[in-house]
Length: 423
Image (tube, rainbow, N blue to C red; front, top):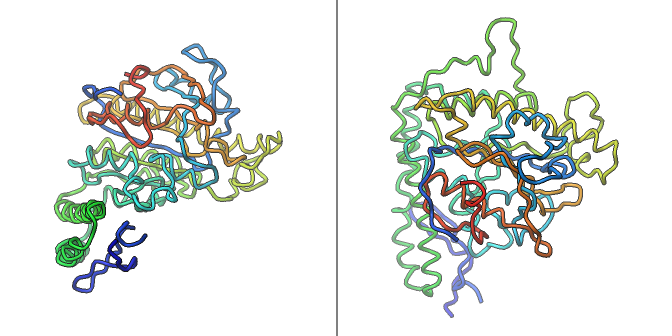
């Protein structure tokens, strides 16, 4: 076996790019025609939802809306709830919240970081070619790049509004252009070193190196995209969403009160074709929610051990999440897209978390629902469990991909799809 330094870097003109782990360095059904859906939105509460208040008891259409989701009753015909969807192979702990959109843990893909590529970013590559932003990542992140890198997010409504709707001044554009010129062609800088290294690698590692260079090339495409949009004016939107409408209106931009503002910005982003893919995560942590009846931090409440007094407090937070989500669905329903159709009709909305029960750090039976998109909604579906595992959540992801016109039969740990239930 060829012995190479594991710390080997591709180098060129002062640029160093760490290589992925290489072995040589150490001992169901076909895609169906898409519906009119063309947008994807994921909303994820970091610590999930209390199972006892999220899942209905009855299956089918004649179920009683569970306690945490009562505010979603007006939308029951527009959404579908699932019981016993899991990511097989994902263990417990708060880290599983990061696996929602890819179904794998970092520790299991050290030699294949590309497996961390999340559903929203796959969709961004496919649906985001004609928009200024391939994806819009807000709040607490659950998104991973093709190279297996956790992607940054923005939780400041003012910054998000500026990013979407405020044109840069001439001096800022000039500086941005300068940075783009300096950052361009990273792949060309390291190409010669990569070519020399490639001749010393086994074939399996040559394939890995090619995947890595493909990821670098994707960065170059992103830089080119930013340059192409630099001189294109942004949509003109009044800032009432963050400033209020009139002297008597006060808009609270502090979390969690800014949740409604973030949802409004998401609707505007879709309506103006600024992006087709959005992820919005509610953060974890042990913050004290400023709601009446809350006496402990959020994280402390999630470790309720089924104690009634803690569950009552936790339900205040999770009921708030559901009510804000319900308001978002109504806004989507009432807002026309560029073709005059309801945004909800043209948007796949996924609500869920990689944590099934935060109290026990369980990643089983994830709280998942989908809405909109022309799906056959209105039901609650419960799947059988095979030992520890339920139905792969990735089966739903395959259906989402296909509903959005992407001809892909597998994703992550999928074994089939849920087309028979939703399309």
